[in-house]
Image 1 (cartoon, rainbow, N blue to C red):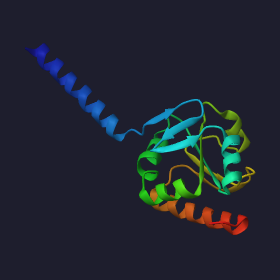
Image 2: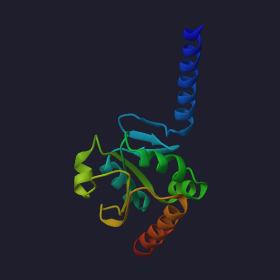
Image 3: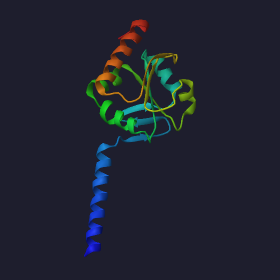
Length: 158
């Protein structure tokens, strides 16, 4: 009887842990060209993102992340899903996701050594603004508004 109770408790712990992780984890999928993070489709190659930005006259948001980063998960589950942010990122920015464990060249190019790191650049790769670390939705939304205003005041458009 004691073995059965112990086994039941272990199964319950496993199920509860699995459900907790499923609910609280950001799903990150990727293929050769794209990463799919927080219901966004991100370019994985910065040069491709810069080309799109030049064509569409939009600034680039480069999100430096890592699969092991707890603050990235928090940014992906609490900040990026915010509807104000989603609308602005979908309409006004080109998205590039850089996995720090896979693309060291881009992180070195911009002096990024830890995730999460949010970097905004123009179509030539020149830095407009950067935010190091996790930020909540209200703070990030204000940054997006500022970057958008700065970019379009010098590049025209929207």
